[in-house]
Structure formats: structure tokens, C-alpha cells
Length: 538
Ligand code: CFN
Image (cartoon, rainbow, N blue to C red; front, side, top):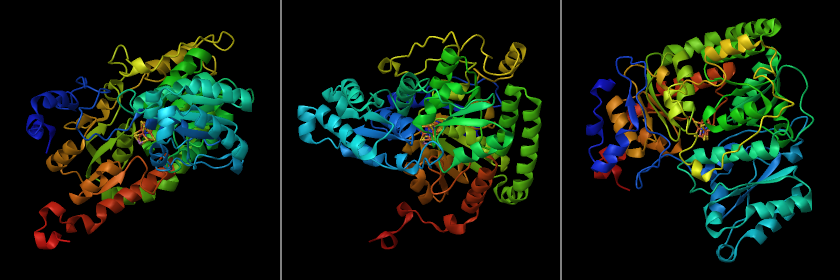
């Protein structure tokens, strides 16, 4: 099957005309190796009634960005369901370190005001204030986050006022997020709201950041299954000081010193570009789009980072580490590669992994024939350069843009924080670094399909059409593909595995994929809908 045979109209026959017209705009095929990406509709409202894979604004703010900050207590203000279902499922790992002792690690706990009917009727502000008193008394956190859920916006509790009063009472930062689930069209709105508050209330408030001229932050890395730790291991081995990983295994104690870095690396562009850009404006700290998923991608990234610093020792040490790491993984990787080679896959994840994992799959000789993002924006598909004005969120009417002034003491030239000439900086920008970002399209194979906000029905259809050997997705479509006889691996939580990033992660990933591809279980399945009544009866 190639995309030339894919007839979107046929695939979507059951849709009413209006829905067909809408959904067609969200699918783009790459034919004849066309270099320029056709326009794709993204970051718009899901058609009501369609079972989308998306999450909500609260999920993007609490679940993705602020929840993992380990030394903060994050209170979900709302009925218990939102707190409970966002508890622990993302596998963002955290551990104690020099700055954060074990008793200050709260990220594995779940805190909620558990709003009841009478609180909804009479207001929940008093209950929230009382809860803040309790958590301060019991846990003594350094700072607190309060995340709003849908009903809070509807009843109009004033989180700003409650936080301000509690801050004065307890003398610690209490940061609130108006991230009601209904805002915007997906998680993406929540990322933006979280970024704004972190930038306004945390970054720049610390004075005890690491010194040195090789200090970096890794933005948009959430330490799922330990990815952040593998990346940190490699970077520290080369000689960098990692100040903070945002927000995987991160601490308030480090985030407030984010501005001490010489360079920001951006792993997940979708969820964190706002902070990267605001820090460039305010502090003159440049940022570099990176990818630590895939062996070749990691190598290219490490070389790019070293080039940014332009230091001969770092450049040399980078090559030493690359050589050593490659020697350690290559024989095993080759073994798995011989199993994986030539196989095809779908990647359906939220906002950046569907692209990033294509590099690792390429290392294994696999081809991604269909790739979809749940909530990405057009630049994640088409690239930043081809879209002249980025409208950061279609939902931005709900999200006040922060207008940050450049700090005159910090900011003279964009290269101030790097020991690099202006010419070198321009050269790197020209080569695609810093403010530029390529979307997924250039990396799609010829005959591949990009699909935005794919839904359950379309996933089934695409499986029938393309017969992929493996599907990378989330929990919601995992079991339907199993029933269709296609192995599925979760790329959000990595099921129970990981890390998958960097050098060591690639081996774990390759092993998991080779296992999934070589088990005979998938040929033995008769899906429930193909069973006769006797076979399927209960
Ligand atoms: S860890 Fe990230 S990498 S933050 Fe984002 S866009 Fe989600 S939780 Mo699930 S796996 Fe996914 Fe990305 Fe960035 Fe994760 S692809 S959907 S909101 N995501």
C-alpha cells in the first residue's frame, strides 16, 4: 500500500459531508517526494461526537508541565476525578538530590480539594484556603501550585485572591493556574498557561544558580521512564552542568535559577517553546532545538551543542563520549536491527514524539508510514520557516500573552551567554538552529501520511489500509490494535519500560520493539468480531 492508493474519501465514507470536509483538511500525504509541505489544518476544535485521543487544558498544565515539579505540592482544585486520573499515569520519574531531600519530593502524591456539591453551590475558596493551611502544616513544601478544573471556572472561585492571601500567611510562593479543562481545544492551551506562570512567578527569582560557562537547561524533557537521567548522564560526561530539566525530575529550587544558564536546549518544542522564547527575549539566552531520541539524532544533537559553545575541549570530549557510547551499544543494536529492519510502523502521540521517534525507528531500519499528532500546531508539521506568522494558540483568546521586557543588564546581544562570535551565531541560525525549527514533513517517507487529531475510527481504517507491523500510540488505541492482530507499544508512558532516550535508551527501545515484532501471539488472535457465537459466548 502506498499513499497513491489512499483515497481519503473512500476511507471516510461513513462521515456526513460536513465532517468529511473538515477531516480531509487534517490529512496530508507525501507524494513523489514533494519538498514543500501542503498546508495541514491543526490546533482546531475536534468535531463534536468524534472520539478524539486528545486531553484537556488541565491535563496539559497539571499533568504535563507543572505536576512533575518534585518539590512543589500541586493541588488540583476540583471534584476528585481530575486529581485521581492524573495521578501517576505519566511515569515522570523523580528522585532526591543535593538540593531536594526525600521528604521534599511530592510528585508521586495526589492532592485535591475534592469539591462536593455544597462547595460547588456555595463556592470552594474557603475549602481551598483550608487545604493550603493543612498541606503547609503537614508537608512544609517550598512552594505550591494550584490547578483549576472545569467547575472552578464555572462557579468563579478567585484563585488569585486565595493564593495571594495564603502567600502572605505562609510566606512561600503559591502559584495558581486558570487551566480549566474546557479552555482552548486540547492540552496545548494548558502548556501555554503553565509556561506563562513559570516564567512570571519562578524564573529569575533565584540567586543561587550554578556558576560556570557550560551551564545548560533541558527544556521540554519530562523524564518519562528515566529519559531525562540518560540525557543528563551523557551531557555531564561531556562536561556540561545541567541546571534544570524542565520539568522532568525538576525542582522549584532549580527552576527559579533557570536564567543562570548559557544555553537552553529544547527537546519537546510543542510544550515549552514559550519559555524558551521568553527567556531569549528577557535574558538573551539562546535556545537550540535538539532531539535525544535516536542514536544518530543524539550524536547530531551533541555535536550541535558543542558547536554552540565553540570550545575545542568540549568538541573533542563530545567525540570521545560518542565513540565510547557507540562501541558499547552497537553490537546489541545490530542484533535487534536485524529483526526490525524493513518493518513498518504508525506513530500516534501528542505533540512531538511522533516526529522524534522516527529517528530512532530509522536507526532500526524501520519506516513510519503514518504519523499523527493529537494536538500539535501547524509549525510542528510544516516547519517554522514555511509559516510566516506563528499563531501560537488558536485558543490564545483564553491565554493572556506575557509581554516581557528585555532585561538591560542581561541582554546585549543574542550571543551574550555563549562564548561565540556574532558571525558564528548567524552561521548556526542559518544552519537551522536557535529560532528555526523543522516540522515533521521533511522526515516523512515518500508515500507516508500525516494526520492531525486522529480518532478511533480513522485509526482502524488506516490499520486496515496500511497493515503496519507495529503501532506506537497511547492506552486508548492500544487494545483495539491488539485485537486487530497488530502489536502496539505506548509511546506516552512506554508501558512499563524506558528510558528510551540517548544511547542506552535506544537499546531498551530496540529490545522492546524486537520482542513485539517477533512474538507469534499476534497471528493467533481471532478478534471478538470474527468469532462465532459458540467461540465468543460467555
Ligand atoms: S511527555 Fe511530552 S513530548 S510534553 Fe507533550 S507534546 Fe503529552 S504527555 Mo503524552 S507523551 Fe506526548 Fe509530547 Fe511534549 Fe507526553 S508526544 S501526549 S502533552 N507529550
